[in-house]
Amino acid sequence: MKSRPDHILDATGLYCPEPVMLLHNAIRDMAAGETVQVLATDPSTARDIPKFCSFLGHELLEQEQFDDQFRYLLRKQEADT
Image (cartoon, rainbow, N blue to C red; front, side, top):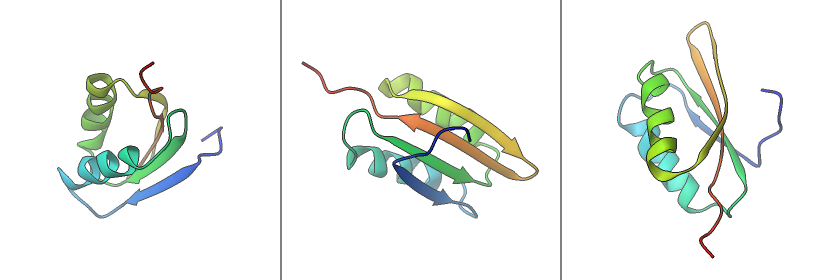
């Protein structure tokens, strides 16, 4: 990851749908514009997290895989004006 996140969500060892459910809870508690780094080992997150961002309007800043670990950096959508 090139950017330093505001929050880190460690979902390693968890399987679908838990990583996305935890991410949904984490995003809900964040301020608009803050970032969260998600660490996961479930390969389905490579599909689920980008879809989560697309569906809810959050920005997927980075997505990386190192061996069996997946890392994502997301920015929470700005609040509606």
